[in-house]
Image (cartoon, rainbow, N blue to C red; front, side, top):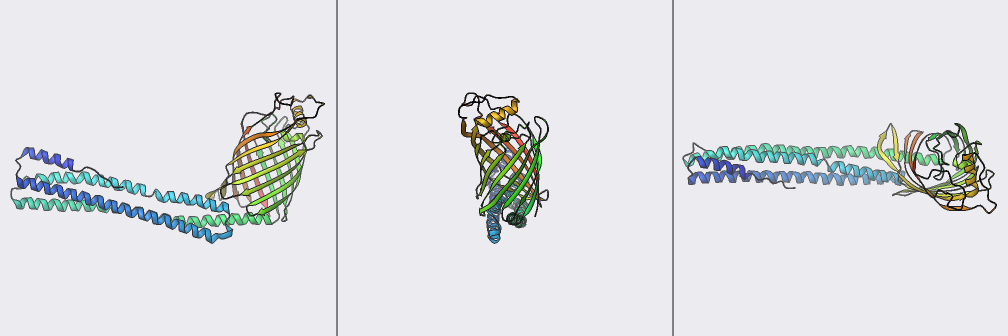
Length: 459
């Protein structure tokens, strides 16, 4: 952008002050006009030179951005199938950050150029004001000598500032070149990390492995329901994943309410499968054992069939979950469907020596609310009998909860740490106004649940 300042006014004021003190003559008037023209010419040349140098810097920026696009495109094509869609998305985000970094390199250079021009345009009129007085000038040769002296001084001053402006732009171009080299190394390292991570995931799906896990949850809930307790749960689990897809798992958990102690044990048998590199799923049968005093919302049943599928697209990840809970002596059963929409974002570079992935997610849960199971939950909470109807029990299906969550995963070798922050918004918590006579004790206002899971995988 062209930078303009008014430079004639200070000089004219100086000339006017001198003119008021001594008698003007045509030779002196012509002399001062020639000095003004020389000054204006120097200022115009300085501005033109600054504009030209800034355009050179802009051209260097454009070339660097084009080179960056070409570089990343070539590296991605070179990676081929060893880089999945998630990795390509990460590189796209990385490229946007690099483009921004290169773009802002010109800000300090432009500020420096503007500052130098302002200084030059202040200093040159002051110099002209001193020379224009020419108090000892009486002959044409005196004015000619003074005119030549001012021209030499103006050229010298212009050269000093021109060198400083050129130096500022050269520093800008050098910073661009250094950034391109640094970004080249960074992108190559990033692609190596992403391809290794993808190869590890693919290898992990093909080989047998033992997975040990420990987790702690601050506010236990199931389908958005918590039975009215802000109960924390923690415990270990162990699972064996066979290369052909079969999974055998076991877990035990301790709860904080109503009496701290073992509350939930389970054994599961499942099968994992891949439909395509971006689409996988699993089917699992699980048998649960709860303590007699358990207030966990799932403790109204003791068996479940569950199917999970994940579709990883370039723009987002879709996770669907279908569960059927039954057993436990109540005669009731509940069907649940949940859908989560998220986006996995790999944080560039190393974090604590590993890779960090963030996955902001929106979710919703639909499900049955079976009157027989609700009565069982209320009985556990209130520790007394509830009204039992002789008519056919009601089963209501509808939305049960919404949630906003931020899961993260830090992977360091075979160890994975996964903190999860979840904001749960319960919906349609049944009360006496519905077909059920008893009010669901579960929390009906939004709440926060935090979970920390540590996983070790051994092949």
